Length: 384
View 1 (spheres, one colour):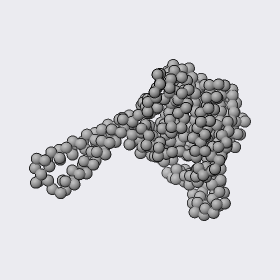
View 2 (cartoon, helix red, strand yellow):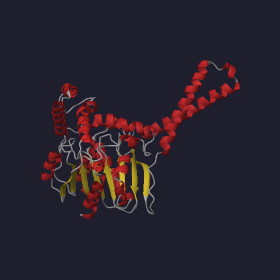
View 3 (cartoon, helix red, strand yellow):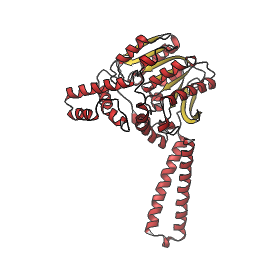
View 4 (cartoon, helix red, strand yellow):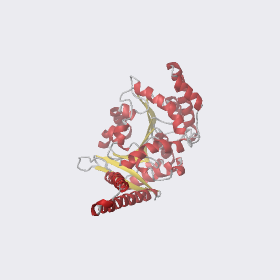
């Protein structure tokens, strides 16, 4: 309902702007002598407004995912109803009869619909790869009011989406891959609904959200002091040790997370060091409004939801998962501490489990070593 209302408002504003501008233009043509400088200025800005609103409207309507040139392929960008919320998914594969793989993006509030298409195109030859813009992110930014989004929202919608995919593609189960925040969401889903999933892969795996923040903060402080970054040390001291609460969680967390991300981006042993954010935002999946919401989700949704996750520790809350679980870890990941994942893997009760190390990766092996990542996904999911 929220997304429909926003669409109707945008449509109404576009029509009104064009009509008002057209009427003023006709008046100018009929009796140009009575057109004052103020009306000329109004006409000028009216034309600009009409063009801008029209551009937004057209861009939203023409957003699409590029076609795949294969006999039985699928390449769709669709909005579906999930528990009464209008949310967007992309479905891509060379053969729509192949197994279904649902990719859970990081965040909360992040959209990786375009990024996965760019980085993991190889998987589209072996699976129908589904990317989901979760509520409060990207194309699904308006699916739910930010203040109403909780971890349970994502669990409920993730399960509903899974059931939709099973029915649409006539599958008893699907495969699940989760990145960063999505790796925790994947554990939630696989633990609660093992009958719906063949197996799960978590990469940049999150284990204990509060402890992760404290470890990241301490590491950034240690590195900053060693490097003589006095301004950063001062800022970290001013913010204090996490976890943070309130309206500035994003900005306080960004102080040390960006510092650690820059460290990984410069690390000589890490390949393809990071996201190509400009490329992703410019991708055809996103209209102009989606591009704005690409950023709004990362800031606003993250701020609201992340502070709700501090009580979660997979080592205590999710010790048994009745599907095979694999962790794809970057050797130099300083964002999600790999020591916590090793602890979790030891106590986890699962039919199969294991850690696959990526020796030239940081927090994002699916980007840093995308070719090997795709190979390992195929091995774990289709050959084991």
